[in-house]
Image 1 (cartoon, rainbow, N blue to C red):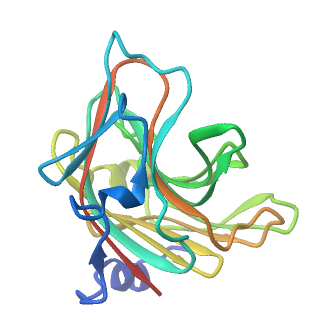
Image 2: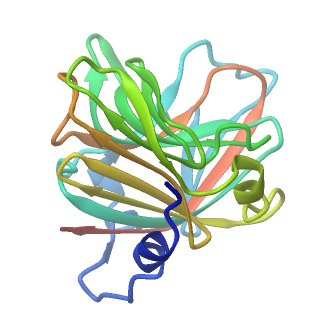
Image 3: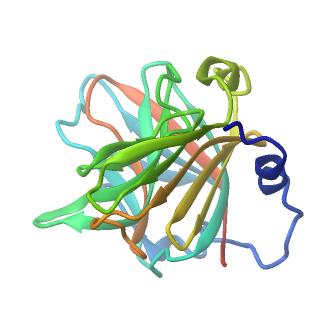
Amino acid sequence: MIFSTCTQEIAESQPDNSFREILTENTLDEWKGNPSHWRFEDGVLTGETTPDNIIIEHSFFIWNEELTEDFELKLEYRISDSGNSGINYRSETVEGKEFVLRGYQADIDGNNEYTGQLYEDKGRAFLARRGQVTIIDAGNQVHEIGSLGNADDLLAHIETDGWNSYKIIAKENTLIHVINGRVMSIGTDHGSKMKEDGLLGFQLHLGPPMKVEYRNILFRKL
């Protein structure tokens, strides 16, 4: 089954003044992250590692103000070629590790191998790859039930050097990822590990030096 018209209507939803900007100079105290890895300047959140500051475990910048339940998130991101990042939501901290999350992730990477997919970080891994519509059954097995288009064709809508828009829609147990107006993945989670709420955070992935930037982070409850 190929999904087209209905997903474009989702991607092109009308502007709504119920969105609010959740990361500004005035709301910075609602967030936490390792200052060696994250900084917020001139409206841009930057996560960066250097040859002298390599990390051996993911480092997150986490919103502490409220849990993400049913919501819509809109933002812009830019990432270096070597970068690997993601937007975690309905997530939880890992015991004993203040800046590490596990849970659903809207994936992002500089090579765009994974960008747009639904991943569960430190959990069930790939839940819906780019171009897939999936159902996760009660036993946590993933079943592809439809297509949003060829993964490489969808890749053509993602900028490799500049800013991209990313939208996440989480409604009950259905999770939708949209980049630059194109629906990239949809997963409906009936699994025993499905999460109804949890933390929002941005990932700085372990590995070689990289840089990721986020701006214009808008959120609304559904």
